[in-house]
Length: 246
Image 1: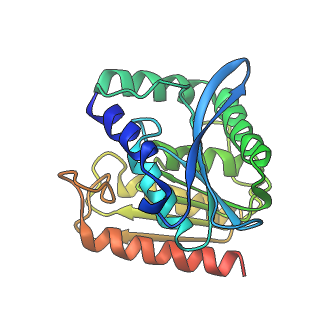
Image 2: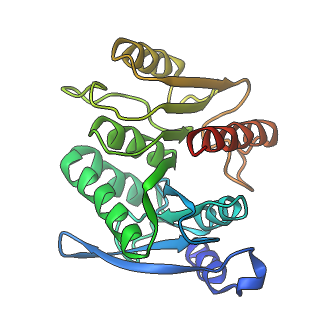
């Protein structure tokens, strides 16, 4: 309930609270309603498609979207769970993410549907990068493996395992992975395995670990938040975007 209240407050804030005005966007994929969030500081601004963690699209992604908009980027924060589905209990979060981990075809269709929804809002989808947090990071890598025509793929403390039968031969843009060395949910063995897979597929990539940073180290206000790792990873993300969109 607290998360939903915070999201509603954030969505209701006046334009003056941010440098650009954003708004929820309801769209449909496979006959189901989803509610994303779109903000753009200017016409034809480069686009970042932002993928949420296992809480669903909340005030956290909205805040990150406006941080990016203040830097000059349009952002479409996707919804992979469905309109109104914002789980707060761990068992529910596991259920919703687990369903998509088991149905990779659906996950890919939801990612593609979000990009279509962004295009319908006037976003510059031909000049786009995607980034995701935690579960969203795993979704970003899934999108990369699908051969999506995006200019770059970025994960923050995201899932790094490669599903059986998949690989990175079809990736069409560079991959940036930012990971906490102290992450016990996604281990350094997972990190190393991904590095080997990307190198074998000759995918341009950069992979960074932050010492002492646990899983979810960028989540403001959380007990695992690490300011230093958050700042450094955000700075690297900005540099990646500037280089990719130049």
